[in-house]
Amino acid sequence: MIFKDYYKILGLKDNKATPEEIKTAYREQAKKYHPDINVKNNFSEERIKDINEAYRTLSNSVTKRKYDRMWNSNIGKKNKVNEIKRQEGTISSNLFSMLFGKQENVTKNKEEKNKNVPTKGENIETQVDVSIEEAYYGQEKKISLRAQNGKMKTFTIKIPAGIRNGEKIRLIGQGKKGENGGKNGDLLIKINIQNDKKFELRGIDIYTNLFIAPWEAVLGKKVSIETIGETIFLHIPQGIESGEKVKIPGKGYKDGKGGRGELIADVKIMVPKKPTEEEIGIFEKLNNISKFNPRNNFE
Image (cartoon, rainbow, N blue to C red):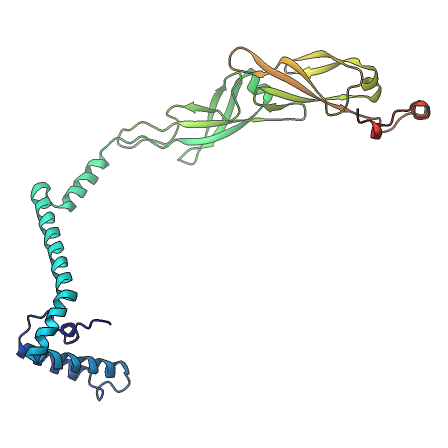
């Protein structure tokens, strides 16, 4: 059952109203919501029923006494709790103001103080692409950035030998300007090491392709292969297949401890696209005499 607040329906604050105040409030509400005045408002009919019901209950001292007990349980206690909280809040606010002054002044003084605090400028981040060999040996590189005034500014950065992919070089004080005498921010340059057709960097290992002819794969051969800064010779064992990898220790990228990773050669057996007539004849002869079938070779 929904509890109706008759005092609120009559426009009264609480149950302390006198019989005269209850009668006056009833007349005002009855006049305000009378159906003859609110012809098009269906709500007024329901409202006038509540107003009449409230007046019948509160105008009789016996029914009013019974109703007030229910009102205190449902409405009065909540009002008291809310009033206590409001008073406590007011007391706390006044006490805070007595001890520390008004909050507005505190905030304002804090803001004024912060305006004069030296603040470091923001960092600026950018990136630059370098080749594997440039990163391996290290070098100086120039980059141009647009400054806050709109003009282009050129920076010279020194890339240390053996820098790792994704590492950042910091130029102190080359970022945005500080405020109130604060230090300038820094310029952070991220190094992106780019792979190329010849080399691919994976950690401290360098991958490359080793292209060989079919007869070199069958017979085995010493072949030349490029590494960073030099050409070395590598022995290809007999019967090597495409997809096998040959590892050459100490010929990879710098490991940061004075050593190097591995150079890993990925074997790819290539066939001539335009063989000569003599080569075709040799392959035809090989086709006729060979019993090798790679599709049956599961050993």
